[in-house]
Length: 226
Picture 1 (cartoon, helix red, strand yellow):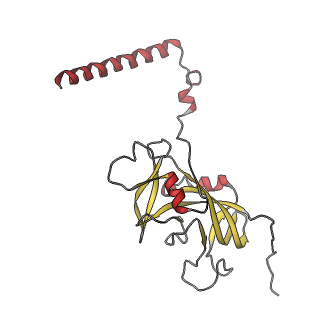
Picture 2 (tube, one colour):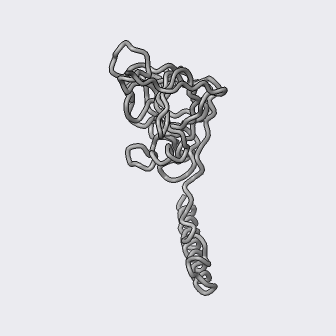
Picture 3 (cartoon, rainbow, N blue to C red):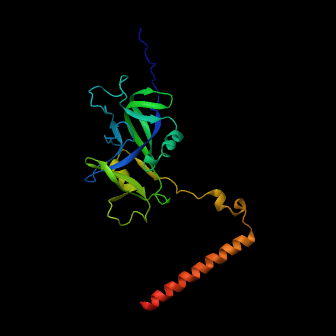
């Protein structure tokens, strides 16, 4: 006796979340993504159909294989994957699950998908990303990209593309947004929470003023030399 999985026929396609690395083709005419685990060697577009990562000819998702696109149900679960060291430069994707799918406790494995939005993580310096720059690795014919701020994205000889340009090249109505910058420790930035009173703050202000005066004097000497 064979047990069949219950069939679902939702009125609207399910929504899921995943992480991936944004990719740009060598000639800059195509934009896509590559996964962080199974199938990471196969870049895919904003609207694409899954292919078996093992080269088998069956359609994905196959119940006897683990091929197909993968995503989780909850945004928080996908964001948690960004905490690992090897995934911190990846982007967060919101996807629409299309075609046949298999539902699991944590997410879906499915045949087709449309990437609706991409959230780019902050630059390595902590500022919000303003561009996507060459990450220094890739796949044959594709360059991996990572978010950089306006300052870190200048110079260095790296190929850069704006967030809007990446969305336009990817097509399919993709929306690209930047994650807010990394905030400071709220306890350390709040004088009341850190226990600083008026005398301590006055002393800090005097120290900062002294440093500012020193910098101004150095700038004055440089101008006199010039």
